[in-house]
Amino acid sequence: MKPDKFYFKGVKVTCCDLDGSVRTAFDKLKKGEGPAYICVTDTGNIVNAYRNSPALRNAINSSFLSLPDGRPLSLFADAKGIKGIGRVAGPDFMEEVFRRSAGMDVKHFFLGDTQEVLNRLKDKAEKQYGIIVCGMLSPDLGSQTDGTDENIVNGINQSGADFIWVALGGGKQEIWMMNNYMKLDRGIMTGVGAAFRFYIGDIKRAPVFFRKIGMEWFFRLIQQPGKMAGRYLSTLPFFIIYAVPEFFKSKSKLTQDL
Image 1 (spheres, helix red, strand yellow):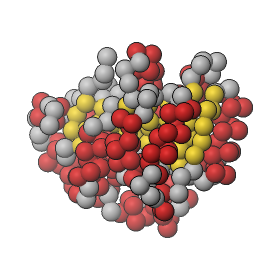
Image 2 (cartoon, helix red, strand yellow; image 1 turned 180 degrees about the vertical axis):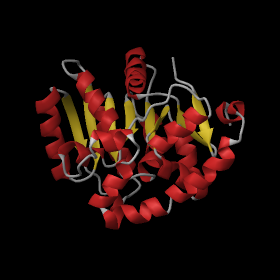
Image 3 (cartoon, rainbow, N blue to C red; image 1 turned 180 degrees about the horizontal axis):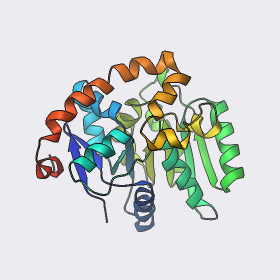
């Protein structure tokens, strides 16, 4: 059964935790219900979807699951009495799917980042979990032609992938998945952003304590101040501002379909 959801400034967030989201994804594969895609939705994506990108908002709202990535989202849901939400970060979701795939005839395809990153990702995942990696592709979307998406989709279809992990950058990957998932023969695409690099250790995850108290963003800011400062300054203050009027909406209004 598909989990409940709520909407923050018109952007969908699925009411789930890590275990429930992974079980839901595997259940959909088992039922053979056709292709789908999953978005990992943090406060930055919500703010950008609401303020700057109707296409991103449409992509998130049309997804099979919109995973709640960020302690602020779960705190907001708790305060509104919306149950069943726990933080589901992209790296955690991906690795938990790897873990549960061990020893199963479940195939994985990696799309995005550099070929060097993909090679290291494949080597580590195969050694650590024994998963089946059926394909990898590092597309040059900067010189995209009319046939680029078709070639990518054909490669995925030929591989027979069950899980397609997409790392094309936040915002871009969600729109790309929305535009292309129905061309797949089967499988579930998930946009995981920097999860490939977290998994291979190029970017360090915050200690568990930081994650539990909702301060992983601060740990990442320390690691990558040049990259992350602008991103956080352009989104976090707006999320806090938007949370006030959203909090005073009725629970039924937040959870009704748009």
